[in-house]
Amino acid sequence: MTKTIAILTGGGDCPGLNAVIRGVVRSSILQHGWRVIGIRDGFDGLVNGPDVVDLDLNAVRGILPRGGTILGTSNRGNPFAYPVERNGSMVLEDVSERVLENFKTLGADALIVVGGDGSLKIAGQFGQMGMPVVGVPKTIDNDLSSTDVTFGFTTAVEIVTEALDRLHSTAESHHRVMVVEVMGRDAGWIALHAGIAGSADVILIPEIPFQVEEVCDAIRRRRETGSRFSIVVVAEGAKSASGEKVVQVGAKENLGVERLGGIAHSLARKIEACSGMEVRVVVLGHVQRGGTPCAFDRILSSRFGVKAVELVADGAFNRMVALRGSVLVAVPIAEAVGQLNLVDSAGELVRTAESLGIMLGRQKVLDAVGLKQ
Ligand code: F6P
Image 1: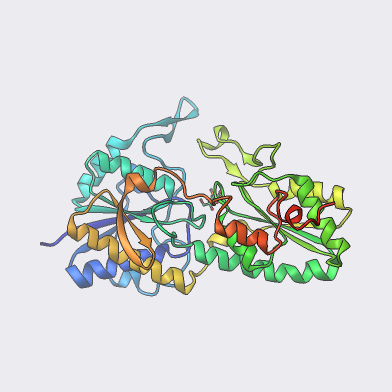
Image 2: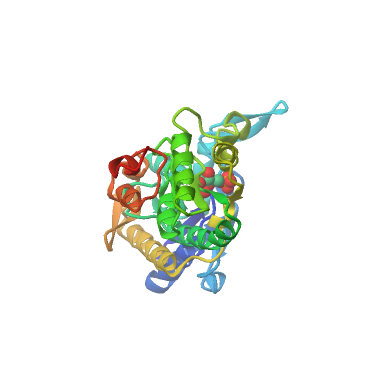
């Protein structure tokens, strides 16, 4: 029987979104003869509208290597707390019933939601209300549990690693400390992976509150032993043991979502003061989310798209596709969004970094080998 599948992309953009859309469209049409429609700008396209576009084979031609999402996205349109203007000020209202009504008018048999923790939580809530939803895990932060990895993460790590390789030139030539701020709101996966791959000297992540003194010590010690430069990678959500996260715009002023950023500048001032060295800051920001997905993410995204269509064919709703080892599985959305996938501060990857002599903002390696004075 012919079906109509709707798909939306929600949350921050991420390399591989278009590859998922292409996977969904091609397998729906080529394997099942189904119709696919795309909803524009995440859940916004169901709140207002519905705002949809037909996705045939022509619509997805050539999009596999393209960054961003041809459907558009939004990371502020939660239908259960939707920003609306009332008497000149913005308030948050529940418009979920309107979304359900608009979805019904589409006559779609399923909705595939490609998103991170926020969008998948929303999908799970609509699933509870009877909407036939399937989730696909997206985020460069890799902070979704129930899957070994999210698509987009590997590309972001490649981008940051290349940046660290390039920044070594200036750091070494000018005998400077380079403080590189990367994304990672709650989880330090990007900082940790790229920091190891890009030979950082210090890596600071949200899961390990850091001591500024330890960071200074590590930099001074490197200088004393002949390395007149240092590379510090800091995740935007990292915080010192005595301090708070550095927030650019608070949740209240930003419709419930904290905008992070600025930790590198605040850290740079402290490092300059304690080491007397010249310090420069590089904030990689949305560069990490942009551009073409790497081969791994193109393949993973394509597999996720095809698997999501299989779940629709099987009527396996309220599930998210996930990678376990080398195999794709389906997990309940509620389980996937229950808790974030954070770096284990005592885990193998952290221990590897510390064994390599990378300082993670806490005194450990130097004490262990008796180098700390
Ligand atoms: O969730 C992914 C992420 O890249 C976070 O690390 C970051 O805090 C956030 O998106 C920034 O989103 P935007 O600036 O697009 O609102």
